[in-house]
Structure formats: structure tokens, C-alpha cells
Length: 305
Image 1 (cartoon, rainbow, N blue to C red):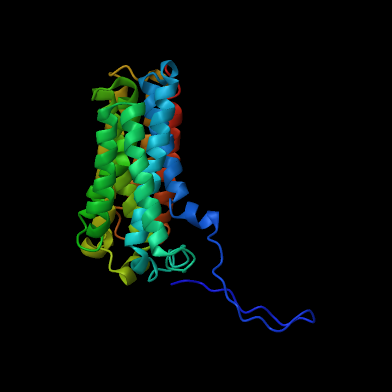
Image 2: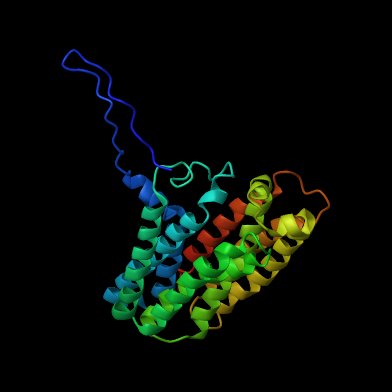
């Protein structure tokens, strides 16, 4: 759908002009296609992985990693918006996005997505290493080709979608080290497990919207109580995994204490979801607490002692 400007009104200087022109595409709408809030989280975790691997010694490589990851995420999100534009039009949360609202032509969104993706991989390959570029390609393909169409077919999309979301900190690590090592894999596992209760909370909060679009989330397919049980289980697995960074000598005692406190709070609230009726606000608080938890966890990693 293309927006057309209204006719120019008649003035004393001349006759009524019925000439219509296409309005310019607003930069903010092109940026919105990249989902900047999600992109900022990806960059935060990528930078965290690089810093833990010793980014202070390889700043040029780290900057290339962040640039390549930024473009990869922007491309993936733009392509996701292009592919889901009809579904977005059905949901209250997304119907005012640039594509369903008609402010950006689908072909432009497609071109932006493909262009960013095409730039991202060479930058990662030449600026960092082939391993990091391969992980970037895996993230792009799994998100766009597998996860996006799978969302309307199976609740297993939850786990599939967590894969590309968990790769950025590992990419930050491999950009610096050019190796798949235990600390980088633990960072990947932390992000993978964290996304599961976080996404389940979103699914519970927006259940009616997802119903309208035919999304197969865990609450839709298995019910709310089962979904809350899964959130508690994944959080229970997450907390001990975060502590593995201590014996791997990536983090120290201060991190262990802070991670334990944060983990106890997050797990405690998640376990409250096992009650038959945790109340209407449980999912929203689970969502907000998951964000606080992840931010605090990566903040705690800044303490090396």
C-alpha cells in the first residue's frame, strides 16, 4: 500500500492543483524496521562477549564485530518485518509498524534487509574471522528462513528463535579469540536459556494478539499453566549455568554473589507461576524481571574479582 499526499488547496495565486506526489519515507520508519530495542540488546551482549574475551587488546576487531553484528541484526529484523507484514496488520501491538501502516513499501523493506545482510557477512569475515562470519550466517538463516515462518506452525519456534538470539555473545567471543571455547559457549547457553522464560512471559501477556495472527506460542498450544511451568523449569536451569563462568575464570567472587542474588529473585518469581492462579500481573512482572536480571547479570560481569 502506498500513501499519496492530498491535493493542494486552491489559493489566490493560482488554480487548484490536483497533482499528488508520494511522500518521502521517514528515516525513523526505516530504523523502526530494524527493531532498534532488540538490536540494542544484541549489541550489548555482543560487546559483553568481546570484552570478556579480551577486547581491550583488539579494539579494531571488536568494532568490526559490532558493526557486522549491527548490520546482520538490522537485516534480519527488516526481512522479518517484510515476511510478517500481513500478520502484523492483524495484531494491535504491531499494526502501526511501517509496513502494515503503509508508510514503507514492502520492496524497500526487502531491499534494506537483503542489503544489510549482504554487507554484514563480508565485514565479519574480513574484519574479524571466518568463524564469526559463519556464526553470523547461522543467525541470519535460522532467524529469517526457519524461525519466522515456523511461528505460525509450531510452538517449537520458541527454541528455534532462541538460537539466533543467543549467538551474539558467542560471536563477540570468537571475534576476539577465533575459537569456540567453553566461556563463549556458556555465554551462548545463558542467553539461550534466558530467552525461554522471557519469551513465554511475552506470549502470556499478548495471547489475544497472537491468537488473532495465528501464532503458535507455548501458551496457545499447551495452555497458560503449562507455559508457566516451562518458564520455571528454564529459569531453574539458567541460574546454575550462569555460575559456570566462575570456575572457568571469566568471573570472580563478586559476580558469583551478585549472580546468585539475581538468580534467586528471578527463580523465586518464576516458581510463583506454578500456582494454579498466580494473578493477572504475573506474566508482566516475569517479563520485567527478566530484563532486570539480564542487565544486572552482564553488569556483574564487569567485576573481575
